[in-house]
Structures are given as structure tokens and as C-alpha cells.
Length: 417
Image (cartoon, rainbow, N blue to C red):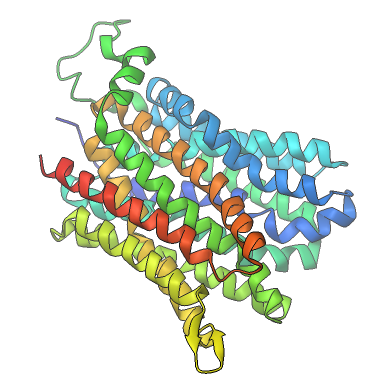
């Protein structure tokens, strides 16, 4: 059985430091949006280049998620996270001195690689750092790292940029991430201190366990149904979540909201996603079935977008619900939908086909999540352009939710075995 590292004299929970490291990495994903207007003026970034700057992180995840997960399983969980934080810090530091959009694009791709090195091994590392009865709770907290980092960047970025410029925003996050790497390196025990299911007996010096080789781990992961089910479920969640959140500023602007109000409302919708993530961990710990949480999350997301975007026949034609109700529906969409990633991270750890394939399974899940985020917004935009408005957005998210419910049923059957 896995050895859970003790805290000994430490006053800080190492698993919490791992989660904070994820938040630090997520800040780099969200730091670009508030800086885009300034970058377009300062560096002459075109609208097309801005789109690539936003999507390069997801493109890295979509193409390299599985490979980085395999590398993390072989390199070592802690070493991978520390290395990823250092890559993020260096790329952000150099980005502050960028003089043109091409340099920023290259460094953005490097940041995407660093982000993957941080996010892939974290669930597996948390699994080894906590007692079994705390695992679901802590993985639920881990599921909140992305909305917390994104919301923090959306709220803090405009203030820092207005006071000191976009370069200081880049350099400040570089310094914060460097400190996070040092803290994680100090608090989390070294990789060689971990004993896995496959290493109950002390190994001879230089010996390598047969299943440590990446081809075996790759074959073991992709031939098992569990990794596929959690990966496709995450794609159904992430595609519709980012499609709705990503276009909220545009929707609010078209509705006549001021820029400051738009930023706050969008950040709030992103932030409440943490509530669902944290709640999922607590509910799983109390014995609620993962299938129930996934059913609740996907049903709420489908219903929330129906209420938020659909038009309904009224006496004098068709119209949407009042703005307050539509905003509350979007809040529920994000908050209750947040139970899905928290549950899927827990299931990914449970349904990984072996101890040495947890990061690989998470990498496969992250790759499909990135694919959903890459494909969802353009699909929603295409539908909106075809029908002349956002009132059919619910049809796209509804299809994703129905597919998620079907996958949840299979996950429920698999997790009960």
C-alpha cells in the first residue's frame, strides 16, 4: 500500500502547498485576458495574434497532455512540479521584456508547457501526501485551482496593469511563482521518499521496475476504460464551461454593461466554480456517489444555459427571462457544474489502472479537457453567427450535458466495481 508522508514538525500541510502551486500556475493562464487591450497598443498585437495568445496554453494541453503525464510519472512528481514552476517563472520574467508579439507567442507556448508540468502530477502527489479519508476532500480542493487562479487574475490584473503596467504584472507573477517553487521544494518530501504499491520490498540500486517504462504505462492507460471515461467527461464539461465564461464579457458588452462591471461579473461567475469543486470533495467523503454528483452537475449546466440564453414565447413575441434571473442561472451553471471537475479528479485517481499511471491518466484527462476548451467556444460562436444571436447557445451546451450524463452512468458502474 502507498505510504502517506507525515507532517512531522511541519506546520503547513504539504498537500495544501501543492494546491497553492496549482493556483500559482493557473494565474499565468488567466493573466493574459486583462492585459490584451494594453498589449494590442504597446506591442501592436493583432486580433488574430491575441486569439493565438489565448489559445496556445490550451493547444499545448491538447497535444502534450498525455506526453507530459508520462514524463511526470517517470521523472518524479515533486521534481516535475518544481520544474514546471521554474519554467513558468522564467518565461514570465522574459515575457516582461518582450518587444514584439512573436516573442510573446513563443514564451506563451513555453508557459503552456510549464503549466502542464505543474498540473499533471499534482493529483497523484496529493494522493500520496494525505490519508485515504482526506483524499476526496483534498482532490476537491485541487479541482478549484483553475477557477481560483483565473478569477484572481481577472480581478487583480487590471489593477496592477493600471498602476504599474503590464510588464510589472508579468514580473510580479514570475516572482510569485519562483517563491512558490522554493516553498514547494522545502515543504514536500523528495520523490525517493515515496513507496508505491510496486515497491513494497526495497529495490536494488539502479534497478528499475518493469512497469516504470513509458510504453508499458501508455499501453496500460489507454487500454483501460476508466481513463477514457473520465477524459471524455471532462471534455464535455470544459467545452461548455469555457464557451459560456469566455463569451460573457462580449454578451455583457452587447447588453450595455460598463467595462468594470463586466470584469467583476465575469470574475464572480468564474470564482463560484470553486464552491462546487470544494463541495464535491466533502460530499464524496460523506459517502455521496460520484455518479450522483456528475448527474447533478451536468443537469444543472444544461438547465442553467437554457434559462440564461433561450427565448420563450410570450404574449407579444419571444423574449428571454429577466437579466437578474439569467445571471443567477449562469451562476448556478458555474457553481453546481464545479462539482464535475472535483469528482472527475477523484475518479481519475481511483480508476487509473495502476499506481504508476495516475499522472498519465490525469494527463489524458487534461488533454481531452483542453480539446473541449479548444473546440467549445468556436462551436458556440459558429451557432451564434448562424442564428444571429446567443439564444441557441443552450443547444450546444445541452448536447454536451446529455453526453456527460451518459458517460456519468458508465463511470458510476465502473466506480462501483
